[in-house]
Image (tube, rainbow, N blue to C red; front, side):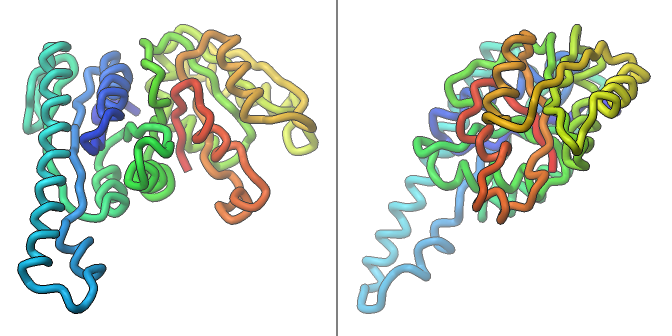
Amino acid sequence: MSLKTVLAPVLGNEADTAILNAARAIAAPHGAHIFVVHIHRDPREVLVPQIGMGMSASMIESIIEQAENAANESRAASLAAYDRWRETNKLPVIEAPTDTDGVTVSFETLVGEPGRIVARRARTVDVIVVVAPSDREGTDASVIAEAAILESGKATLVVPHDVEMAAITGVAIGWNASKEAAAAVAHAMPLLVTAEKVAVMSGIDDDLTKEQLGMFVDSLRWHGVKATAKSFDASSGSISGRLQAEAREADAQLLVLGAYSHSRLRESIFGGVTDDILTAARIPVLMAH
């Protein structure tokens, strides 16, 4: 399995830079192509159903024109950030598959509902890069992150807004033996085999024994992954906090994690590792569902 295509959805805000830099960091060791995609909603589809009766046609057109201007401004901001990033890193623009060595890039604009666009577009790439959702990025960033994680069927790299992603030499895996964790590891295999060290971290309880953890580590070693195991008591404390602390201690630049091993409803009611990681991540996290 190889990593050859990366999707970087951008919205024309300050998060664009974090997404672009993370996309390059994950693409560089593999000479992957980065599809930078600016996404914005169709102003007419968003505004017309919400405009009340009694407004004149000229007023409606004025409101739509303002929304279209805002969409054009956000696209211009994304394109400017893309151009600066591309020129700074000397990245060639390629529009079709070629034998070119190294990272290549392209830029496109897609209009529509962001979640639907990302889910469909993401199914044609290897990895999607999104920013960890927060109030500062707004609703569309959260919609994009959720669609990428839950609807794409591919790996999603979630990067904290204010953490610059370093070159990946160490990787930590949060292993709970779920199918979601297995999917995340499968998608991450190109990164795992090239990493200098991989720490497999697992909370030991009745559902996962040290022997079972050892079997998983051996499965990675069959692929040439330089993996070691680190277990901890899963019966108390914050699992998400412990995973991030252990990842930092292992000097990992990336945490690999299965997303929503429990149902979204259960996690929304009782809390869960995925949402905790998404809202408080201090390290880039590669997730799959």
